[in-house]
Image (cartoon, rainbow, N blue to C red; front, side, top):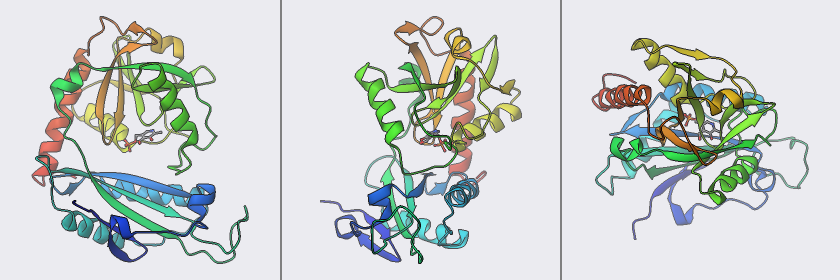
Length: 293
Ligand SMILES: Cc1ncc(COP(=O)(O)O)c(C=O)c1O
């Protein structure tokens, strides 16, 4: 069986040989942060932005970055090279995780001496097919039960997991989270809506993760004359939207065609999504050929 090569604390190992202590604070407390970086045809999507978000997450949990950006890049590129393509798609994503490491005793306060645990792996990413995307998915709105630092890409994902599962239990692909009447994001995605003809997404802040895909969509919208607003919007406005999308590194831009069991507009993906997905896919073609980052 094909065994992928992963990185753990300075070593490159087959996946089944990578082991950590049960006293690792990531295991005991979910005391750590992570990143997911797509690589299209071996080219990393927005590596600098991912490194900046990682630094922001580490700063927020008061954990020193164990590696320089050059070292992160070196390990990422070696892992991509050590895990040759196994399928027809050349797309992969790199997962990286940093925890506050192993302490001698289980104690909530930080240990005196910290040796971060660094784990990285590469997974195959199934290429997103526009025709498949076009049929869209169902979503439900749920109360955002998470904590007040959703801008941190924390490995503590219990709230997100429970919300996503609740969506699945209701035959929906994703949950759209509502905090104090306002739309924040999805359980593992950002949310866009077309309200009165205008593309809208919630502003960044502690209520949501600043998605790399979200930022890229905004940048591409600006470059291509698609009017958009970053502003708070209510659940009521969402229910009246003519288009709703999720965005994430692995799912790209996914239209929502059914919300809380009712069709979104005519129950089909809309014209602004159609335009944005073409722009996004064209960006990926350029990235693969080395023309953009
Ligand atoms: C809670 C949450 N919001 C937003 C996103 C989208 O972020 P990105 O576009 O960087 O994948 C994710 C990605 O997994 C997420 O988990």
